Every structure is written in C-alpha cells, then in structure tokens.
Image (tube, rainbow, N blue to C red; front, top):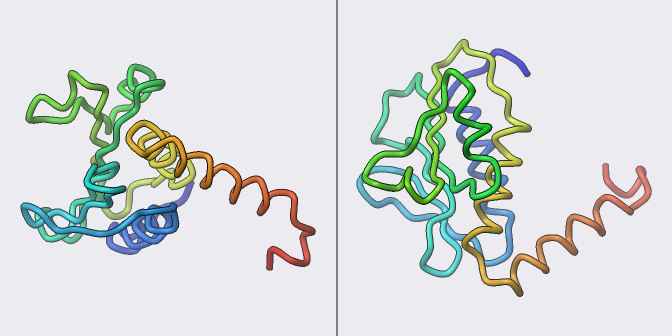
Amino acid sequence: MGKSNARKAEAELLAFALGFPGAWEDHPWDHTVVKVRQKIFVFLGGAAVEPDRLSVTVKLPISSEMALILPYVRKAGHGLGKAGWVQADQRSGDDFDLETLKAWIVQSYEAVAPKRLVKERQARQNDAESAPVSARA
C-alpha cells in the first residue's frame, strides 16, 4: 500500500484492465469503463468524479461480502449491489491498495467474460509467472 494520486492510480488500473483479452474502453455517463464484448467489468470514475477521487466499481461474486468490511467500500448503486457489485471510493493521499483493486478487477472480468477469454487470460498469467525472472523485466 502507498499514499497515491487518484488519477495516477486510476490510469494504472485502467491500463491493467485493458490488458485482458477482448477488453476495451468506453465512456458512458462520463465514467471510464472497461468492457469485454458488450459487458462492463469495471467502472472507473473518469470525468464523472472529482480529480482527487479514486472510484472503482467491480462485480465480486466471490468476495463482495468480505470487501464490504473495508471502510471505503459500499454496495454499488442503481441496484447493482444486489448482483455483487461493490464500489471502492478513496481520495488522493489515502493508502490505495492497488494489488487488491487489481485482484478485484480480475474477479470481475472472470465473472462477466466468456469462458474462452477467461482461460486465455489465465494462460497468459501462468506463462508470465513461469517465465524466467530475466524475461519478465
């Protein structure tokens, strides 16, 4: 964890999500979202939130109840919370746990992506993890 700038953190999370098979960026309602096919798997604040705010909304079918224990996480609005969607909302200067947010993005992607693309993402990850350290740099 580390104190961070909200826009830099959002850019890092966006780049991470866009690295998944079939992922693409869209901008409905002034939010930045990442979709696979036509399904959103992560909402980022984008132009819809203040520049010092990090807002990340993801579908967590496995860990939503655990995530809701965190003080900066709540059920997503517009009825999405009923389907396991949560929103993490923090400000610049807060401690951003980007590794946890990235893990949540993975879980959200795997909840909405076609199985073929999920397997492709997992294979890429396994290949990267089994590569020699010198090849990862």
